[in-house]
Length: 310
Ligand code: BDR
Ligand code: CA
Image (tube, rainbow, N blue to C red):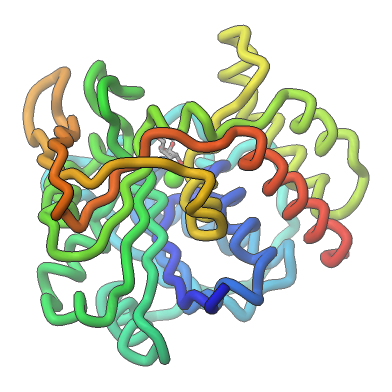
């Protein structure tokens, strides 16, 4: 597979970390230009600290991190309890002295995209505030973007309010801008994520694996699985990991080209995505994934990294 130059925009976040680890496991496929953070699962200073902790733990201090938007475009921040008190509960990271790049996030993204030898893929694992602002302020940047792959939205239901998924609910104005159809975009909504699960047995295997990396992965996944266990589930959805796996194996996903509108208002509808079939659209909305291949890929990626990172 041709190498992909990627920018990861995230709010780590347990599933964000799994997506990032899986990306790091494939240096032959992914060249990571940088990681940007955005207000989402928790406030941006906290979730930025989470990614610095992870990169320090896995000895990848070379990957630049730039702190992004502290607030959504219009609404106030909406931190989520599901990720614990600090946005990445479940593992106590050792102290580090890593720092973020001291640059405005939009100029950081612009610089990374324009200096890339190939058009860039943006992996969007969080509310779309940074990406929408980039597209608004630098409209010609779209010529240098290969595609944006977004975990967000839903066909029929919600996970924070009846009709909206969290990443779009948190900043619907940003989503409306990004989904306006100017850039090739892949949307991975909740219903596709229903197929992007790992079993409780896989989580347990990481918890009981004493290798350096799996101590961390087991800790954060054990915490992330609490919600599913409380709801008698034996499989756990690793939402953002779907973005990495789509880029690795698009053939295990299926979807349909659509226009996407975003509802901006309403107690039950703020952040609702409305998909309308349009074969000429630049937006591919996914519907299904091969669960078995999804799970086997992350098991293999974590095993590979756990043997390498000590
Ligand atoms: C999305 O919200 C966050 O909790 C996850 O990290 C994911 O990006 C799922 O709705
Ligand atoms: Ca996320």
